[in-house]
Length: 309
Image (cartoon, rainbow, N blue to C red):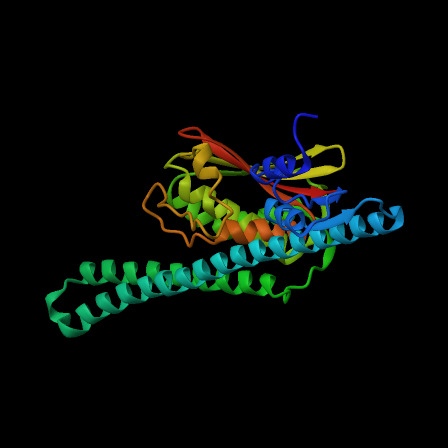
């Protein structure tokens, strides 16, 4: 009662949460000046009294549809902006991270080739080890980039099979066992013998391999890593628990976002690609599941692949 429609509209349009609501004026004021004032206040349409209810309802419906269309366009624009940011970050990773190991390897190789007699055998072996580590990181990055690009373009087909998780974990632990032994890390498979789940063999294997490899990297010498499963109603979680360095909540929130490209050195200065966990997250979602993490700085982390059963 204390204000007219123009004042009410101006208040709506001054409020960020309400300003996009379409306003139709239903009024007996129909002069040209009144129309202009109404549109300036933020109205989208004008219906004068006496009015036809059918016409009014049709105008309301039309502007609701227009509002929905505008919202859809705005959302699509925001999604495209996010995709462009991810794309830019992706190319930044390629240009920076692919170049780094090559530059280091070329520099070390050149050093030996130019002055081979200046080095002792032990020094050459040390340099070769550095070149080997750089190329190993290079290969891991290329594999992750290829897998990530394939899933983005839909070129990795999801093929669900009944998977025996015990044997899958055993095979992965066998492959990564030497990495754990090098740091005297106890790597334990506590998955029960007959534990099965429906999922894509390649994707689930890739996730578990990446998670165990990461756990080894961030677990100190003489630490422990445990692989086990937890069933909760119709969900099965494959858990990789480590006694590693752990993470703050702030760092956990950066893990699965390519725009952050979160990566850090392991406990013995091991390097990572920064893409492994992003790939794991997308593979988990492709299996109609999720990848979650709980972590505490200085205590350790638990990464869980949550799947339907």
